Image 1 (cartoon, one colour):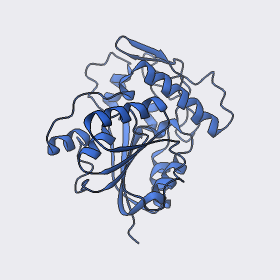
Image 2 (cartoon, one colour):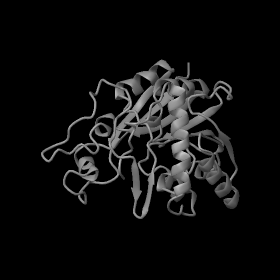
Image 3 (cartoon, rainbow, N blue to C red):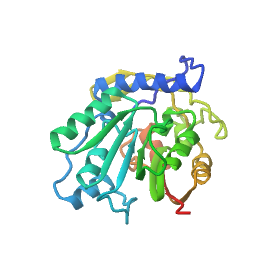
Image 4 (cartoon, rainbow, N blue to C red):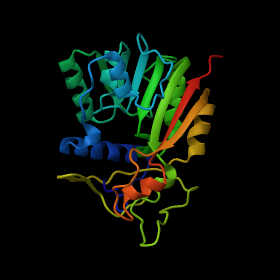
Length: 275
């Protein structure tokens, strides 16, 4: 995938950034890129569905049956539907109307009960304190400038003893995508600088599907994410850095090859303190 550009997008404040990214994700969803639609076919048995949903075992020991699950920014994917099929009481919150529609229609077709709410992940005020036992949040913090605000909201709605599992783009690798000089990669910004990452190309490519959508992306530092969890009353008990492939098929200097040397994602699991 070609990384997105924000060089020519003037966003005056955080609210405008989020609104801009909402429009871009509706555009990407209309084009049908893999991140915005259901990819693959889940297996039939409960155990296999759980492995499909949690292939790296991050939810080990968490019982989904009867659990109140918030799928945060989980539109367009299988997670909210599979949680429901595994017996959870599921609420999806996503900012994209198109992605909400994808989950609503797919859940209905499979007979899965998923409550769908269109909303901004930074504002969970509609939900009461301690409303959820699990908050599942995959790969979307990169699109908001204020990750700590999102995590603070999660800490409020997560019940004591509850689990928050989230992932986002790795802040080091994100700064290096598309910067190959012929001899190495050159960071686009300093690691300490959490402003939007500038990119030169706004074209998203997946095979024959190509769409221009200049999303605005932020490389939130790992210390920012961990400290936000702590301040929100959660204890971090798992942190992983990983890439989906080994980069062996990547051309020299490509993003795929970069992910051979550095992780694409950082994933964090936190538990709400019971006191």
